[in-house]
Every structure is written in C-alpha cells, then in structure tokens.
Amino acid sequence: MKKIKHIAALALALALVLALAGCGGGESAGTGPVRIATKPMTEQYILGEMLGLLIEDAGYEVEITKGIGGGTSNIQPAMENGDFDLYPEYTSSGWVMVLDHEAEGVSDDEMFTQLQQEYEEKFGMTWVGLYGFNNTFTVAVRGDVAEQYGLENTSDLAAVAGELVFGGNPDYIERADGFGALCETYGLEFADVVDIDIGLKYQALAGGDIDVTNAFTTDAQLANPDTGLVTLADDKHLQVNYFCSTVVREDALERFPGLEDALMKMDGLLTDREMASLNYQVEVEGLDERDVAHDFLVQKGLLEA
Image (cartoon, rainbow, N blue to C red):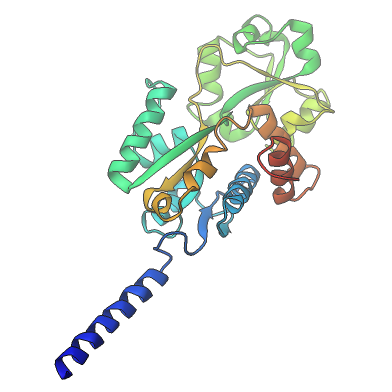
C-alpha cells in the first residue's frame, strides 16, 4: 500500500507541475496578451491600433507598446528576445537594416519571399501580408504647378525645372541618395534650391514660396484638401520601396490559433492616399489614433460599428 501511495503522490506532483507549466509565461495556447510594438511615428501608432483591434476581434487580449525609440534597431532585438510577438515593419528596412542586404537590384516580389525565408531561418519569425501602401520618398508639387506644366512623372520636371524653386529639408538635400541623386537621375536643374525646415515646407508650398519639395508618400499633408498637392511618379525607379507588413514570431502564431488569419485582414487594405489621410486625421485634425483605426476598419467591413 505504501508503494502504491508513493506512486500516486508522484503522479499527482507531476500533474501539478504540468498544469503550472501550462499556465505560466504566456507560452500555452491562447494565454497572455498578444504583444505589439510600434515605432515612434503617427503611422505606426495607427497601424498598431488596427492590428490590435483585429486581434481583439479574434478573441485575444492585446498589449501595445507605442513609439519605441530607435525603431527597427531596438524592436528587432526585442522581438528576438521574445519581448514582443509582432510589429509593423517596412520591407526595405528589414532587408537593409536587419538582413544587411543591398536594397538595389532586387524585385519587390523577390525581396518579400526572401524576407520570409531568411527571417524564418535566422529568427523564427515571418512576414504576414502586405498592407498595400508604400512609404517611400516622392516628389510633391502644388496642384496648380502640376496642371500648368502637365506634370505626372518625375521625368516631366526636366523640361521645366529651370522655372521652378525646389525647397527641401537639409538632410534630404545633403544625403547621397537624396536631392543629388534625384537631380542626376532625372537631369534636373532648378531655378533655385532652398533649405527649409521639414515642419515648414508644406506651408511654404501652400504659400507659393517654393514649387517642388521632397516628401514621403504617406505624409499627412499630402492628404490636406487645402493644398491640393500632387505627387509625381518615380518613373525611373530611383527610390527603393518600403511596403508595410507584419513581422511576427512563429511561436506566437502557434500559441494563438487564428492570429495569422487576423493579421491577413491587413493584406491589401491601404493605399498610399488612404494612409496619408489617416495620418492627417491624427496629426492635423487631432483625432485619437484608435478611433481613426476603428472607423477605418468599420468602413472596410472588417469590424462591426
């Protein structure tokens, strides 16, 4: 009898250990919150809220850490350490900053496939879906200037640049892949070039002080109805692309059944103009990023009102 009781006690102890192991650390299926990180920029705050809302709709708790300083350089190591489960990332950022590849000479499809493969092999992570928008450098002109000269592509500027004033923030004008590369690639010689603070250039455009500036394709001010700005197509493919997607740990996909389906709802969801409009609502109109994210997902039929 004593031997039987001893075996029974060991079995009970083992069961308790297994039960505790299943409850601790957020490692068992569906336990603990899904932990999201974002970079310190309006766009990322909105995307983080969208991801969070879709994951909550799938039945899981969410914990969002907003605005991590250093962006990719600090979020990626934290992802590797298991501090976060997922975050929104841009293809060329992962390709260059994390994998240390050259951005030139690779197609977007090839880059995304390789990103998925190398992240799985090296980090136990993958990329899920492409949101649709591309946050990269572009050239913006006032609507009246574009109409007057029939500007659609950046190469259209070559014939009229001598009549226009370019205003750009100093770091863009000075960087090797910035203004110099733009002028060399497209054969541009402007009437004047003005260094202007990044926070003032859209005001300068609207006021007619400058005619052309550098921008990012999802800048909030590109959606400002009062300025009527036009972005020119990069028809000589100078700029590398920064398509946004979700980097996620594969163990998180295993722990949270249905998580991948929730993340895939972001696939093809946003155009450049739509992302710029959402940024504008938060940055200029002062709306809350969670409310903006929620209303957009409702509009797209992905959440109930």
